[in-house]
View 1 (cartoon, one colour):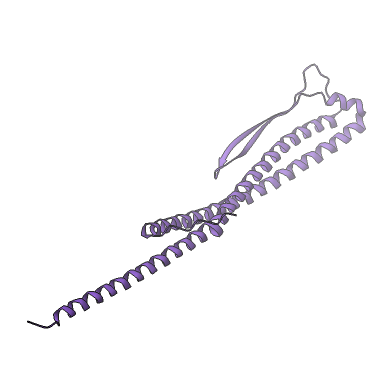
View 2 (cartoon, one colour):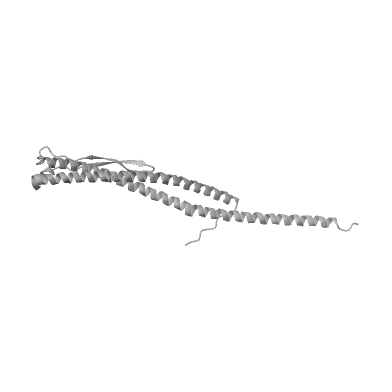
Amino acid sequence: MTPAAPPPVGRAARLRLRHSLQVARRGADLLDRQLHVLQTELDRRRETEAAARATWETHVHEARTWLRRGLLLGGESALRTASLVSAAEVTVEWRDSLGVRHPGGVSVSAGTRAAADPAPGNTALVHARRAYCAAVTAAAECGAAAAASRMVEAQVRRTRLRVRALRRLRIPRLQQDLATVELALEQAEHEDAVRRRRAAKGSGSGHRGSGSGPRG
């Protein structure tokens, strides 16, 4: 691993480091606030996902119950007739929240039966078809909610990593570099003050020596 280059020394370098440190601290504070908001949003998304999953499971259970009743009444042949429907179509609406693009809602067009196709053989299969249509809609909503949760969660992770990088790496490095520069400036100022005092003493001794010589 290549060692880090020593920080530049001088008053200009000190000003730059102080400014960089101030910017890094302000950025970390802003990211901390953003992280708090994102975490709150993630909690809300997870609650929405859990509710959507529960709704989906309820519709699936209801649909399976009606399907079993329909099979008991009409047999496998009745099921083949009832399943003659087109594929459902799902449209996802995308939104942006807190800098995260995610599914914001879905619209579902359930499969339809052609007019020429025979109707289901019994009422239970009619109810089963309606229940499965509701289950498809609930599944799409659950999938959208789950995707939104995962996307917000990924943003939470990225923001947390940025905060850690600033708090644990960037800010301590700037603090260390600033301390090094300030120590070097302090030493340089001390050495300069010593030189000035010595120069002043030397100049004073020379004047006194020239004034005490013999007179003609």
